[in-house]
Image (cartoon, rainbow, N blue to C red; front, side):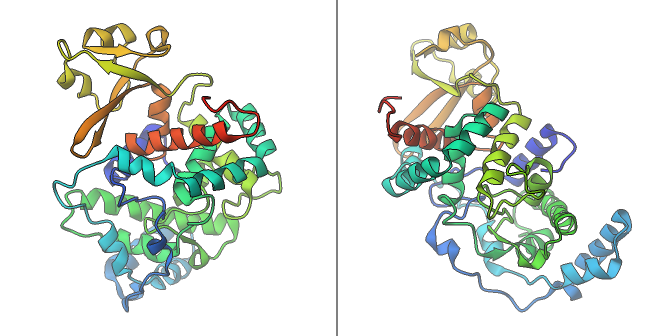
Length: 366
C-alpha cells in the first residue's frame, strides 16, 4: 500500500477489519463462485453525489490534476448495493472454525491447481526466492488462497466498489468513519494508478473491496509494492506471472521477512501452569522469548526452544471443538500483514507447504 511506512499499512488494515476469520466470508479474495458473477449495479451515479464531487475537487487541487477529469472518473461510478451488504459485519456470536477454514483451502482442486502453477513457473519462483529471500511455497500459497491461481479474480468494477465504499459505507458499522477514510484513500490511489499506467480506471475489475489481479493488491499496494519482474517496462498483475510472483515476494520483504526463519512451531499446553490471559494479551504480535513463553505454560516443539527472537501464542478456534495453538514467529506476523488474520496466515503457509510436498522428487513429509 502506498502509505508512508509499513506500520501505517498495518494500522490501515487493522482499521479496515480485513481478516478472513470465517470460512464463509473472505474479504480480499473472491474465492466463492457466487462472487464471480457480475454484480447488480444500482441506478445511483456519483456525479450527483455532493460529497463525492467535493472529494473529486479536493483530489484535483492537491494532485494538480484536471478537475474535470477527476469529476468525470468518480462521477461515472455506480452504486453497488451488493458491496454494502458484503462489508457489513457478521452476526454477533458467529463462531470461528479453523478446521473448516483450512478445509476450504487445503483441498484437491486448489492443491492440483497450485502444483500445476508451481511447475509452470518454477524458474520464476526460484528467481524470486533468490532475489527477495521469500520461499516459493509462501508465494504459491498466497496466490492460491487469494484467487485460486487466477480463477477468481473478481467481477466488480473497482471504480464502482471503491466509490461505493468511500461514500456509502454502512453507517451502522462500528468503524464506519475509519473504513470510509481508508476507501477514499484507495479511490485516490486508483486514479493515481490509472494516470501512471495509462489504464482506464473504469476498465479494472476486482474484488468487492477493490483488490485487483492474481495477488489481489489494493491500488495503494500496487503502487508501493508491485514490481516489474519480467523486465518489460511495466507492472501487470493481471497477465504477467513474473510480475505477480515478484510483487508478492517484494511485499513480504518490505514487511520484514527474515530468510530462513520458520513461521511457527508446534506447541503443547501445560494446563497446570498455563497463563492464557497473559499469553494472549499481545494478540498475534511476537512478544515472548522462548524461555518466557515456556514459563507461562507453553511447551515448544520442534526447534522452538532454540529459536532466536520473540514468539506469540496463536489461538485458533474450532467451533465447539478444542482450540488449536501454535507459536508464531516474526515471520508468521509478516504473513499476517498481507491479511490481518492468523487463520489466513496459517492457511497460506500450509497450502504452500502441502503443494511443495507434492512436487516430483519431494519427500511427502517435507
